[in-house]
Length: 127
Length: 258
Image (tube, rainbow over the protein chains, first blue to last red):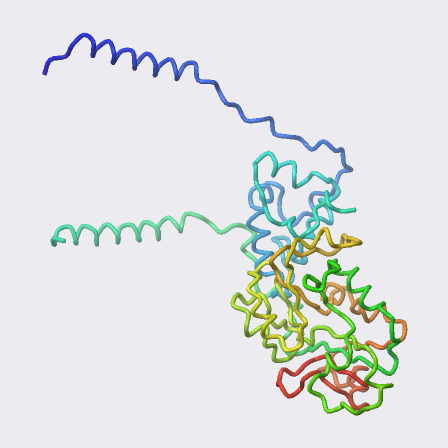
């Protein structure tokens, strides 16, 4: 097989173009994580049903479980400390609606669109 | 497929399953899931409570809508102002519509000429719960026929099976049609059914249902039908009462004195 100069030059051009693309590709950075804009009075976070770290990563799983069982299972939710809670979004909003943007500030950043607020009144909807 | 290939697939799939078995041991249960079921001390035993209502029509004031309005307000029931779209948990209907099969055709107008509060009967044998394909409508431990809106697919089988027409469907987005929004109760969304729920959120706090509380004449009496000493049971024993369409065998928990 004979390789012509034209082909070599063409190949090199493609290589240069690819390298240039990689070098000059605009770097996409995530937006800054929004910090809650509204100053709220400190809530006793120790009273939450689970440690903050756990809630931050697993609140959706917990809420899903509450949603699936809350209506038909009348037993309260018992956390690791043995404290009982009613399986209701109102249990959460009892403290967290203190900050109107508590849910939405993260969800907007993460582009998470939970359908809770189709029916439940979010702190933003509350009159 | 030749033998070798068949063996290979068999062995790799066994290996895959074994791998799953081994890895599941590495992930410890989360702290939250370590709840002991013996902690449920306050669990109600099924069948011990059966909430019921007695509507004493001798006391009901014609034209009064206080119970209906209270229900609308408490549960964010939308008012579309259009009979095709209308949603009713509790409404006052003429005698013929409430008791279409009763033999009281020729009873005096002073008894049958009124409009009767009609609501979900919370039947002991609810046909809507049997009809629901997703078990969104179900009978609770306390006799209340409840609706889990999260599970409702909007098929309207319950509406077709309910002999009392107590269930309404949200044909359009209900929230704009709610006049006064009650922040302590959710709304519904387009495409789900809704009906009277005997206010379990109020019962939980030791309060009576909103309609019972709103009635100025104590027309509506609420209580436990399984408790022989309850006020409702004493009234049921002393008075002649009616149920809606008793011949259907749905065993309604709502009784009327006409």
